[in-house]
Image 1 (cartoon, rainbow, N blue to C red):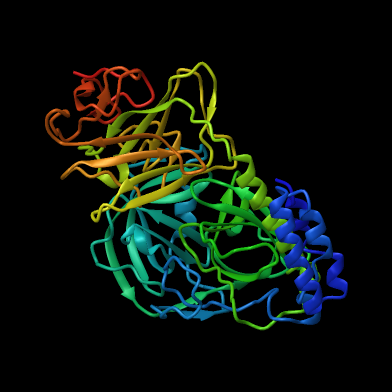
Image 2 (cartoon, rainbow, N blue to C red):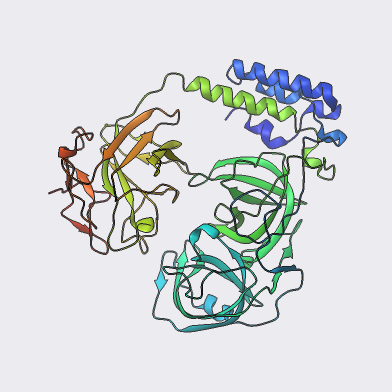
Length: 491
């Protein structure tokens, strides 16, 4: 995108003079850049002065966040829910080394029927909205995360607990080891120390996957969307860099931030993933921080670049075209797996050309009739081939979702009602509705049957009409009825 280089550089020549005047000039140029669709955005970034070089209040801030509530958000003052932060390493062997050794080497492979004991591992991080099914544990030998079918039977999982259990299944999820089935749960003790490794300025090797680190640095580059509603950034800390991934809107280039949380990975390279577990914070009122030279001269000047880019985007979409993509199949009530794992929506491209759906918007309605939206985005292009299918699903793991091959996993906030009908809405990046289906659970729509997807009889029919839909007759995966990713076969 135009201006991306200026954003990444975190520098502007106006920054050498800094001060209020430079900032005002930068503000003026960003407006000009917006008007001309981004042409002047570089000028805005270059002439725009910065408060940062003079230690002002609108550049880079580095608050610390040591709460362990597992909540999604950017508030460093969230209530402390358990665990005592410590810099003292664990010394106990709870059995995690043996469990890690049993994880399959092939990504996507799962091994079951195990009986491996973990005795006294510390819970170090919890994803609150996963209802006690996703969390991390650690001992002296390493760390591993849980992504369970069923939550532990002892109740709420809290950071700082020491737990014992028997592991029955392990999954290699694209390079990340996961415990997927366990039993014999026991909380040994609570409010134990949680080991945080200070890694600012140090490399973070793949051997630290899942371990809790604290890294303070500067966001120096915007890498764009990277799956779901998330964006990736380069976080520079000392002489080191690492990818930071987050769904939070507060992160901007030249923000200084502190991340506290488990180390993640993508394609064998470590990254700090705050999409599901967000300890990253920025501070909108903190003092300027002059110890990060990467951002000196950047704060206000780069605002011109950002505004120019946004204005150009708006200009380039003033004449929207609506590709012919239809909602072709909906599974709103799977039987073999829970709804929040097995729901899916199939799209069909009726045209003779490949169509990109990157940055399109998927929406359904909540109980109040308000739209809940999710932006379809990824670091790789998301395209539907000519006369081809594309499956959107709430869970992309075929071993967990009933056997569906999902092309894109959307946010679990998108849910499909099976109690009173719902609306599935597909919009282009400008918010223009491409297709919408308002389905019902009875005539003239197909009668509700648990475990049966509803399918359009022909993708060229009007999918607003219930009579043009039927319940699926073919089965897939674990035995539910539907044809995700292939030609429909309705009754």
